[in-house]
Image 1 (tube, rainbow over the protein chains, first blue to last red):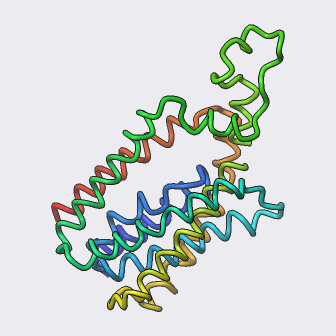
Image 2: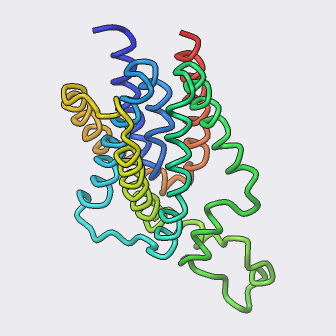
Image 3: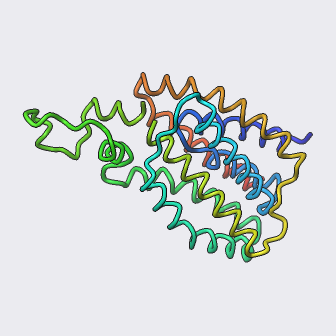
Length: 156
Length: 85
């Protein structure tokens, strides 16, 4: 067992913990390590299967009824089709080292793009189901700003 | 919980789309090794079990974003190290 394999196993565990704790992040942690260990193509196939297992566990193994926002999920999945085909074109045409740098770069861009979003995921969650401030509350003057109750709702 | 559930429904859908795209374009070499999967799937289950209480704790403490940002930065550093290796 090489050091890289141990590193890959650790990345999978840490990625799974992050996925379970926050709802996403498995591939962000595991992909940069699995790519050099398994090679780009096999790493993608492996990541797909492992990500499915992690997501299925979150949705089906917590003894509760999942409550996804179906309209949003449908739009996101439908718009991913062109991206999936484009990704395969990149996978076929780019060498493994360049792909590794691309994966690392995309991991770096992800938090930056979140920070650049004006209202972020929290207000999205509030907009899609969190509590709104009372009409007579001063906070009602700025309804885009999540209330404490709404903020709490996002992650519970 | 709704956000977390939505993200994971999207992941399942995206994974299906990606797998279908790989199959449709006859991309060779993307089939995972069963031995590797047999070794890594239990680790995913262990990680899921360990992460669930952390999720509940993050909700209570309001530390979600700090932990998330820290983990993302660690992932970037890890990726750079492995790319250099």
